[in-house]
Image 1 (cartoon, rainbow, N blue to C red):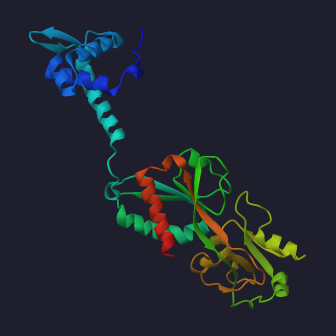
Image 2 (cartoon, rainbow, N blue to C red; image 1 turned 90 degrees about the vertical axis):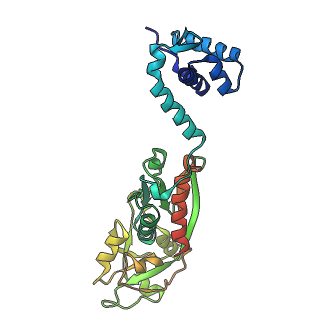
Image 3 (cartoon, rainbow, N blue to C red; image 1 turned 180 degrees about the vertical axis):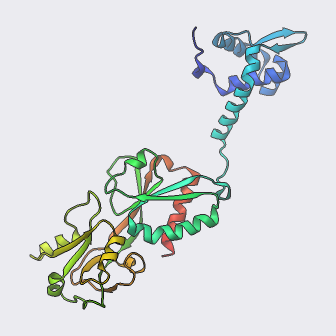
Length: 300
């Protein structure tokens, strides 16, 4: 048994079948469609051949639907309603939004963005959900797979990959230490002599900007502890004689309670970006969500 070439059906054909079914008249359907009766008759003959069915049987001055057309009506109505939603999407209403928004970030970006973002989302879209996952270094695959909506990262996406990058903020660095245990290392020699702690994310580079800066001066430092994230770093540093170079804003987050001082070496600020897939460029709900993130950053 040959299957119908359903891709040859179009919205106008389905609307034609619906109108003839509802009016019981080819001429009445032509009037509602704004075409002449011969055009309707021609299209109806094409559909008879395509669907291999008589579709409508003449009865008195009108027509009655075949069993096949009768059975098609619910599906036709559903398809036409779907096509209308595609052509004329409803404006996005945050108050009725029930979807889950997923954000990928490491704990620095999480600390400064997510708490405020969650409160703002709960206020403007009370039925929506927010999920955050750990951002794997240089791994943008979840964006392509539609597993996440946005990545917050200092990394640049690969060129010509369909990813959109927007600058969010520039962050400076500070030197953290526990003042109840040790004094601040205010000059380069005391900085170098100190025991250092650092964060190294999974698959991240083995040498960061600090080590590269020291190497340019012919110096190096002793790394006594490497943490998987800033929260773990802060927990280990408290009550220790370690020092760590971290983003300045973490003084109110993962590194809360530790003292800070200026670095004895010069480091360029680091730029953080919001990255998403180009397929969401025109999505009203996605544009709204990205706007929430930008408003959080603007309020920092």
